[in-house]
Length: 310
Ligand SMILES: [Zn+2]
Image (cartoon, rainbow, N blue to C red):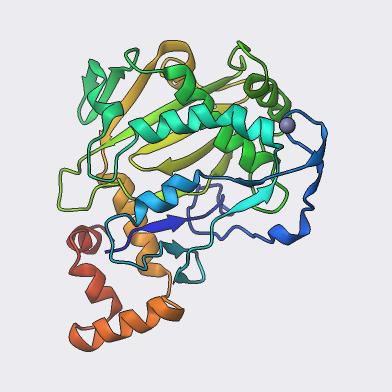
């Protein structure tokens, strides 16, 4: 099973959805203009919102030519389109790249190891949720990496819609641009490491999602998933304490949880999104042999759980 790249934003009820379809039209943003990080006018690079290595990693174990499935509310397609915009100058891309490289080494690897999870020690657990000490890792790099993905999405004009850090854009720009700058005060970055599922759902290792936002009273929450980790960034005057005490920047702690819930949500989304194009033709072939698209998904490891829960 090819696993998906998902995109989404908040729905009308304020629930964070992965499926509501971001808009992209990268051609409208010119190559020349102010770098969004250093603010200097000049030529800007094609800046990926999510790292290019993540696209390669989610299809690494599939036969060539492998393309990620891109799941949107209106359709699921196979595409190798990556999501980028002219955002940053060369020097600023270089500035962010060590954090991105470090993340690539500790998120779930192509052949399965999860160095970030392996490098943590338990602090406290309740039911399935564990708090772990991650101080054996470069948590500063991970925090800057997670923040930079959401900041890029926020300052992009077209690559990602429906997400804004608002007045926190500038605080995060300074945090990312200035050596030694502290993590913004009224913010918390929480990383949920996705452990192997307890049921027969597949692991979250090969899932990548574009950042989405949910507004709450007094704070707002932004999240994205990447190769085994769901990053949450909370900003606002009333970020609940429970998130502040798990902030990677302040406490060097992370959460770990079996990936069942996350995968159930995604499975439901994939079932609702109609297959189109090459993917639809492949599904039609599958359907002739096995009773239809939903049934063919249900035959996959996660199917039975979806059928039970929905
Ligand atoms: Zn720059």
